[in-house]
Structures are given as structure tokens and as C-alpha cells.
Image (cartoon, rainbow over all chains, first blue to last red; front, side, top):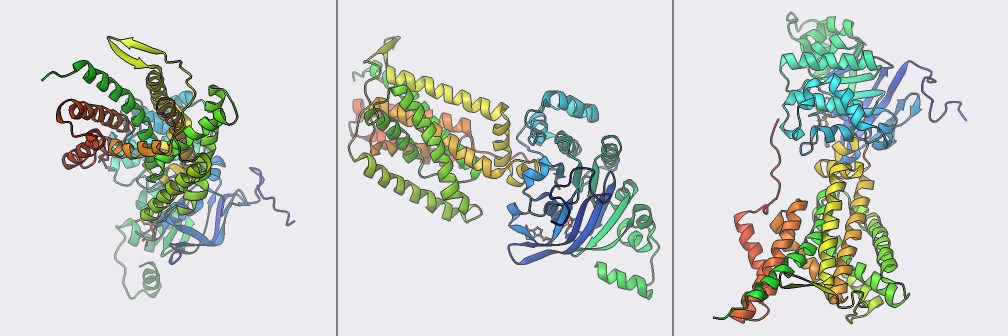
Length: 275
Length: 299
Ligand SMILES: Nc1ncnc2c1ncn2[C@@H]1O[C@H](COP(=O)(O)OP(=O)(O)OP(=O)(O)O)[C@@H](O)[C@H]1O
Ligand SMILES: [Mg+2]
């Protein structure tokens, strides 16, 4: 045997990374190659941001990690996903949730024709026997405004649905949350609120977070480390602060960077790679 | 004209009771459609098979009714799982038409199998009620009908409880809403699919046995599978409540038509087709059925 145990007990992993992707390739419908050698890692207890343009493959990356490609006729065809040092590349989604990996889907994935409470109860589906009534009270401490919403989740505002989606994730007691564009469609004030919550999840509950965002500014402010992806792979990574100050990142994602000359070779090259 | 109003009331009462049983079978159909997007054309055969299994335990194994009944429920639950795993699981992701062909094939296969094993003749259950009946306001309710009524109510309440409060019931609703979302919550959609077929087969068996007690068992009992279509389409393909109401509407219409036909028109057998005319009418007015979903539109 190669010494590496199949299911590494928590904390026994050799690295500080809770999640590592090595050279992942994802194909849809047997022909559409979407991830082309995607490699990255998520630090334990850290917030890691994954940025990139529309169609870069961010959501696909998260679904690949969560084991949710099957429903879209997609599959990981190469590479490996390591969670706590163990190979979980082909572990089915329900088992991953039980092991503590939880995806908050793009568009929130709130079950519209169910009440807020039932949505929250379903969050604990992976933990049979959980005292959901008591735990839902704890969620309300986090999201006081959900308490008053007694109707169907479909009638909540976008912000409330995002809160519900995050609350539902908390009900699963995850160790790693994958969050797909939590700020999508929210007003600036709500975006701030949601990011505040994400930081609380991380600081207070010790949950590691992989955060996919279009709002690069906010994401890099909240994150410890960042990755930028383009066309199915990572093109740039670094500590969040460093990325936030990187001229190219500024120009392409943050806006407000001074216009740079196209003659600047280094920039031009990078630019081409990103487009 | 001298009409027999008492007969009308009696027929309407029967219509409601029989209609509730249609509603129960329609619920089975809707359950599968809603949680697995499969149109089960073998629904009627599930009902008949349940009745045959119970009958054969009594007639061949000389069991008493209750153990035979329980055996049939267990048998049909397993049968439902096996059908899902063997016939439908391999078709996940295939075009809807392939899935429809598969359930039509399943229906033909089950008919042939039942003819082979149980024969072509109608058989009757032993009379477990001893002709017992009650009178409500001058109307006669036979014991078989009373049992049908009570079991329909029990099944409906059980469905209601299951989908509103149980962990797996919520999981099935989540799967019906969106399979990927359900999977992201840690719900195994495979298990949900198998469970939908298991519950559907189990409840179909209850309906089949009740029908068998009243009318006897025969391949012809599968007619209820046909009745279910107007019921679910009237109610809306994806509404459980609609299925029940659709069933009651069909039951009442049938008996109402029998009255009109028998007392006034004297065309003969009109009651058999009347529900289908009504079906067409309703679909012209409400294409999604009375309770078909319009999704909540909110961004
Ligand atoms: N189920 C699928 N079948 C085929 N192609 C897909 C599928 N899902 C995604 N793709 C393709 O993969 C590419 C990456 O999609 P993905 O949703 O991962 O992008 P994204 O980075 O999340 O974009 P956005 O910022 O718009 O959410 C796109 O070109 C998309 O068309
Ligand atoms: Mg996306």
C-alpha cells in the first residue's frame, strides 16, 4: 500500500488544504470539453475566491467537486479531486454531502414550492435524526428576517432566497461550502450583507469556503487567496490582496484601473490569454 | 316523466366512493410522474397484479384475508422497486418517447404474464363481509364500498402526512422540483425513484384488492388504468389533490351518466364513454387541467 489511507481522518491530512484539484478535465455529452486541466486548492479554514469571465467554467468546477455533473450528462474524464487528502473524484454527491462538502448552487436552488422551514429541514437531509426544530432556531439567529417568512420560498425576495440557501447549507453542518455567485442579482447593500455572512461562517463556524464570484472586488476583499480562471483552467493565482493589486486583474475584473498601453508586451500577452 | 331520484342519489354516492378509489390510483400515477417524469402506462396492471397476488394467496395458499393482504402489499412494494431498477433506471436520460414505449411494453408484458399465471377467467374473493351493509339516510352502502371509502381516506391522509412531514417525503418533493438541487442537498435521486415506484405499487395493490373484493379479479380490472387518465388529466398531471378530485369527478360523472342513460336516453353503455367527453371539454377550457402547475415566477 502506498501509505496514504483511503479516507484520511480529519486533521490527519498532510497539507493545510481541505480540497485539492489536480488537472481536472470535464466533458459534457461525451464531446464538449469544458475544464481543461483545472488545478487549485482550498485552504483549511480559509476563504478561497475563484474568479473568471462568463463561461470560464467556474460553475462546472464547483459541480465537479460536488459530484453533480451526472444530472447534466457531464463527467470528470481526467485528474483527481482530493478532499482531506483522500481521492473523492468519483464519490457520488449524497456521500460527499454526508462527508461535509456542500454546494450552494448558482441561482440559489431554493425549492420554490416549499415553505422556508421545509427548505431548511431538507438542508439537514444528510443527517437523519437531527433535531431540526432546534437547529432551525439557530439559523434564525443568523438570519432573523427568515423567521417571519412563513409562506412559500418562491415568494421570498432574491436576497432572502440567498439567505435561505445559505441557511439551508448550514443545516448540513458542512466543513467546506462551495458558493456559486452568492451576490448574483442583489443590491449593493444586500451584497455587503451576504459577504458579511460568508465571513461569519468562516470565522465563527470554521467552515472553509470556495467562493465563485463575478464581483471580484468584494470577493478578493473577503478571501484569503484567489484564483482566476479562463477557458477551463487557472491562469493566475495568488494571495487575495496581491491579486487585488495586480494591474491586469484590476483592469479586467475590478474596473477603475488606469488604461494600459497595448504595446506593453507582458500585459498584451496576458490579455490575449484571458480573452 | 317518473324518475327514480333515490336511484340517482344511490348512484351518486357510489360515484363518490368509486371515484375516490380512482383518485387513489390516479395519485399513484401522479406520484410516479411527478417524482420521476415517467408516464406509467402499466398503472392498471399494477392494480390487477396486486389483486391477483392477494387472491392467489387466499385461493392457493389458503391464507386468511389479512395475511394475504399484507403479503400482497409487501410483494408489490418489492415488485415496484424491481421494475424501477430493471426497466426504468437504465432509461434515465433517454428521450421521453423511449420511456413511454418501455411502460407500454411493461403493461403488455404484465398482462401476458398474468394471463399465463392466473388464467383468463374472473375469480372472486371469498365473501369476507357476509353480505353486511349499512344504511345512511335510506341509502345502502355495502361493506365493500365502505371499506373502499375508509381505505381511500386512510391512503390520502397517509400521502398527505408523508409529503408534508416526513424526511423522505420532502426529499421526493425536492426531487420533483429539481433533481440537481435535490442531489446537491445530499438526496440520492436513485433511492427517490425506487421509492416512488415502491409506494405507487403498494398503493395500487390496496386499490386492486378493494376492487377485487367488490367486483372479483380479472384481467379486465385493468380498466381502472384507463379511467385514471381522465382523472389525472382533469386534475392536472402533477397535482396529487387534483388526482383525487379528478377521480371523484370521473366517478360521479360515470354514475350520473349511467342514470341519465338508464332512465332517460336509453342509449346503453353511455356511462363508459361520458368521462372521456368531459375530459375533452375540460382540456379545451383548461389545457393544464384544473390543478396543473403554473410555476411560481419570481426572480
Ligand atoms: N450541461 C452542459 N452541457 C454542455 N455545455 C455546458 C454545460 N454546462 C456548462 N457548459 C459549458 O461550459 C462552459 C462553462 O460553463 P460554466 O457554467 O461552468 O461557466 P461559468 O464560469 O460558471 O459562467 P458564468 O459566470 O456565466 O456562470 C460554458 O461554455 C458552457 O456553455
Ligand atoms: Mg456559473
